[in-house]
Image 1 (tube, rainbow, N blue to C red):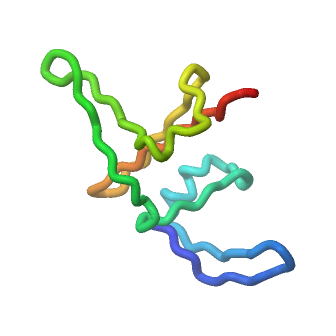
Image 2 (spheres, one colour):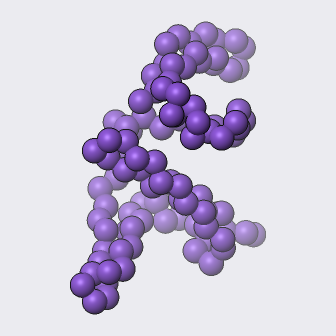
Length: 99
């Protein structure tokens, strides 16, 4: 798990120095821009996984009502799975409604 070693204010930006494990660095696949940091304690919307079908073979992640505004569920969606020992993070990327 990555952690912030130091921070420095530079005008309207904050520069962070990060420490992360080699396997975490490999997940970036060489990308150094458009990186989003997420702290585990900030994940605070309770939700559920819905099961449907024979033997509950189909699973759906339920998006909380508070987070559904301005989302386009008809557009292309991409997903990434990150395994963290005893936990799993699923990251979905959706477009907002096009106006």
